[in-house]
Length: 184
Image 1 (spheres, rainbow, N blue to C red):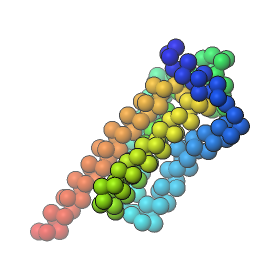
Image 2 (image 1 turned 45 degrees about the vertical axis):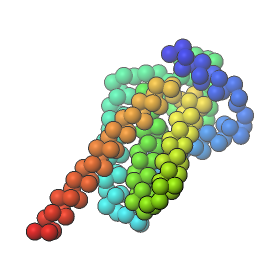
Image 3 (image 1 turned 180 degrees about the vertical axis):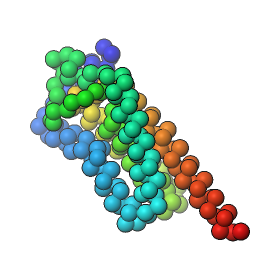
Image 4 (image 1 turned 90 degrees about the horizontal axis):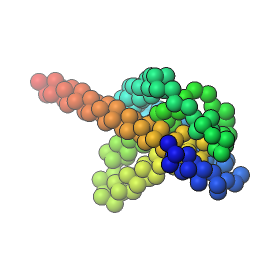
């Protein structure tokens, strides 16, 4: 944990009003605001994907909530007074990061959606890079703001990625089953 404290102290050493505000906005986009925005987008353009996104995200949210309540890891700004709590006051526990999990779910389903549209290799590389940068920025914002340790955000990403991949695999299996049924 000492390394993680040093990492957050390093990030906060470069504090400025610009970074404080920017990381709060980035963090907001990696929260329930992002979930709502993507849900509306999918409802307009790909409503079946919206169902599977919300289904998967529901399991992500439930898993993260249960783990937070079970593990009860305190937030970095509560561990030492050398780490500031920047922005909104948060309650609850730190491990795993719900924002990192949320951003990962958003990124995976958006990448899946865009992957279906763009077939060129260069575009697909851009999709992967953009989605990875988005998740990375949300994770960085949570540490910069003093809300989470590195292991919190990494666990949030891993949990969400695993659940969302399972959700996409289930979606594809259901689609295949319907296709086979329609052929008969």
